[in-house]
Picture (cartoon, rainbow, N blue to C red):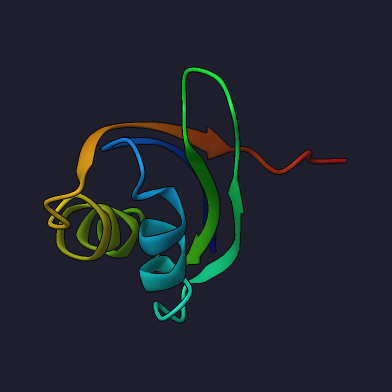
Length: 79
């Protein structure tokens, strides 16, 4: 399983619309509207890095109201 946070900058005034559409993607576990450099943050869990890439490209970046994204891959701590 691969997890990531995606930080999203979207057009002004469309933050809640973007967040609502993201909640329809099953692999997106959590979304939050934020204030600052980024407008929306979401957490994704996908079965592979290729699946994660597909979600980011097809389900997130394809939204015309989204201007930019930054992806933070999460690493599991191994004991």
